[in-house]
Image (cartoon, rainbow, N blue to C red):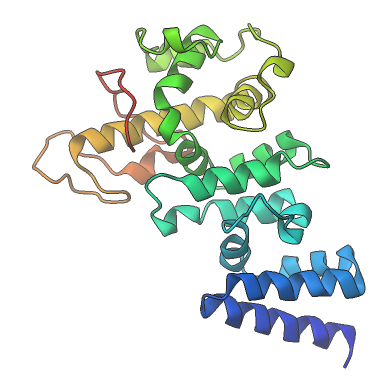
Length: 254
């Protein structure tokens, strides 16, 4: 069997295993290809796999063992998969955060390349907002003060205009001080290396918080109760609309 036919057979096998819920089996099949033919062969296959199938493997990240998919996925492949993650309706976004941290902060990666690829896609800012959903007040405080001091979490939220005007302030903390390979490092990189994307993400995050207050389910267009201020949450992505920020500075379980 030619190499091309072998790859097509592996793609069919991997897709079938994922459809059957055997994520471990699918990842093992991909790892076997890398062992037998090298990383380049796996990268060719990953480029032909559907983003939803790559996502299915990546979001089952287990930090007790290395994942060959997480180690080799390209920024563009990762971004296409990441924007689909909301379909899993994981309210805590635990899988999303673990997956993002494992890939974006892997040893050989340039995190900014991944963030740029995510920001280039429709739905990218929303995916990043979901990543930060449990840290809403901390991100607002960081936007306002430039620090991650928890005592600053409950100050007055910047208005949208003030947020836009603050885009090019200089860092108050060095990257080395927040290099946790987690949300603080991600927020720092976004604010100072991908400034427009940081603002866009925070506007989407505010809109999601507003939707939560109105009783909207993720992706719904109609509030649970009639409300004159209803809006389509998808329109907030890519900066198309920006509903007012929440009046309360309390953290939201978006």
